[in-house]
Structure formats: C-alpha cells, structure tokens
Image (cartoon, rainbow over all chains, first blue to last red; front, side, top):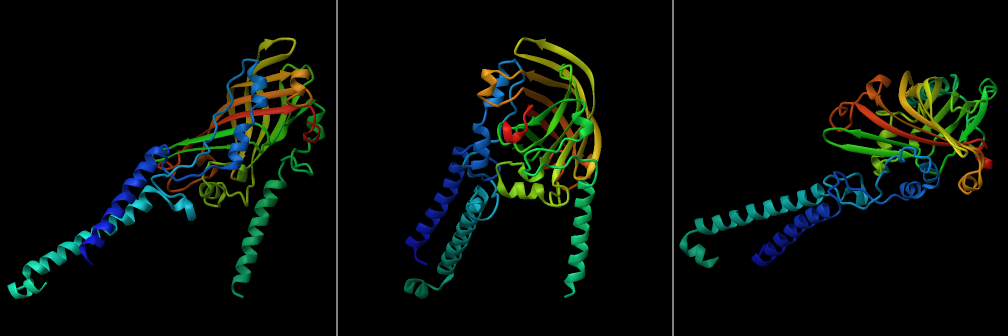
Amino acid sequence: MNAPTRKIIFLASGLAIAGSFIAFAATGMHPYTRFRDKDIEAVNAESDLSDLFAETGSQPPPEQVESVNAIGFLPSGPGLASLSVVTVSGPALLVMGILFWHTRRTSRKVDAAPPEASAAV
Amino acid sequence: MKLMPILAIVSLGASLALAEQSSSTFAQKSADGKSLVVPQAHSSKGTVYYAITDRDRQIYFESDAPLEDIKGQSNDVVGYAVVSSGNTGAIVAGEWHLPVDSMKTGIELRDEHLASSAWLDAASYPDVVVQVREIKSLKETKRTAAFSSSTMTLVVDLTLHGETKTISIPDSSVILMKASDATSKVAKGDLMAIRTKFTVTLADFGVTHPVIGEKVAKEVSLDVALYLSTLPPNQQ
C-alpha cells in the first residue's frame, strides 16, 4: 500500500470518528440512536382535552416522549438504527490501528534491510 | 416432527395463560375494542364515564436507572369509571386496560423488548389492568357552575404481568365537567378527568431481569391522565 492511499484511509477514518461525535453532540447526545416516530408525534399533537381541563387549574398534562432523529452513542437496532458513535468510530479506529501497525511494520523492515536492499527499496 | 409436541405444549401454555387473564374478573372489551363492557353491577351504582381513547396522552412512564433513562407513553387506554349519583367525584367502580404493545418509548426495538416474554410478556398478558376497589379521603377542592374537582386516595388492584397487587394512590384528583358549548367542541357528553401518579416495583409483579437496577429502574413511575365522557366512544 503506497503512502497516498494510507493517508486517504487514515483521513477518512479520522473524519468518520469526528463526524460521528459531532452528529452525536449536535443531535442531543442520546444514549441510543433514534428516529422520529409518527405515532408518538400524533399523540403529542393532541392536547384538546388537557387544554380544556387546564382551565380548571388541574395538574399539567404528563410529560411527553421525544420524537427526534438522533445519532446515539449506541445503536438501537438493525438498518439505519445501527448507526451510532460506537458502530462508526469502532471500525474506523480499528482501521486506523491496523494502518498504523502496517506502516510501522513496513518501516521497520526497510530499516532492518541491508544497505543494498534498502537502496533497492 | 419432534418439534410438534413441543409446539403443542407451548401453544397450550400460552392459551392457558390467555384464558387465565380473560376468564378472571376483568371486564370484556367491546366489539370495536375502544371500550369495556360495563358490568350491570357497576353501571347500576351511578353515572358511567367511558375513557376517551386515541386522543391525548393518557399514560407516561419513566424508568430512571443509573445507566439509562427510559420514557414511554400510550393513549390507548380503554375503560370506564362509575361516579356516584351525587356527582361528588366519588368513583364507586372503574376498570381500565392498557395494552402492553401500545406503550411507545421512541425506540422500536426497545418497544419490542418491552412486550417480549423477558419483560411484560404481551403475548400472555396483553393488558395492564387497573380495577378500582375503593376510594378514601375524598375531599372536594373546588366547585363552580362549570366543574367540580376533588382529591382522594384511590385504592386499586393493579394487574401487571399476570400478577395482581392492591395499591393505594394518594392525592389522586378527579374533575367533573358538565357538557357545554366549550366542552362539546372537544368531546361530547359530560366529561371527567382523573389525574394520578404512582410507582410500580417491577419485582412485585414478577418482572425480573439481570439488567434491572442498572439499565432499567427497580421502580417505574407512572403519570396518568385519563379523560372520560358519559357517552361511549362511538358517540364521543
């Protein structure tokens, strides 16, 4: 593997790691990846009854479950739900580690080679 | 072929569990599934209010565990409450069914886990059932021409995961609202709101799992807002 290819892979892996953390932070740092849910949104949109009874001074309505798109730290299922910080950064870190190890190994071989062989390389 | 006897036993077990839940003293669901058939013994005690389902959020639950905070909700509760004829807000009978598979947490896979046999086992115990046993400490807090409100301790039988426990829920509030132009724009009939909060200890209902105490709290808190009408669901 030549040096430019290594650099491109290293850069792409770094971007994937950074991207996953940025997406995680930007979407609310949810522990699990989640997506908007039409059923939850439909329930959350209904407030006629609670509004009517609010006029009597009754307790506020119960809290509601969020319906958001968010890249979580961990995946929450197959398909798109498998996208997460761990599932994106993990393989990217592994690729970077293998690349680093491969580069070191190659440079050691070059250093250890006799002067003629080294020159040939 | 060897699987056939095993499948038969599993199927028989599931049927027996279902029969156990449905043949108990629970009210049957109406044909359209949007209400319960009110037993004569209950309807004769006073005014029947039917739960208004598929509208506002009725149940919100939260499990606040060290590793995870799970929040869920449902608006699929069906049931009824019978209020004494004096219309003081005294609930003399009532029963509500919350379908387990209607509880949504915002993560599909988690909802599936919640309904699975490892947790609430919706296949064997499709509903969480609440039946009113009695009320205590009834106190009228406000009365106007439009509505009356009261607080009370609700004593109910809660059936979850096939286990029934009697629990007392203090500071429950009931508001009764007479039908008017304002209310008819929202729902027809005289209306009623029941607001209450309580906690459920999962182990008390036979729900055990290695992650309870870590990812799922031992106690789950519930916030209930039931809205009911004197008209059955198909006329609300």
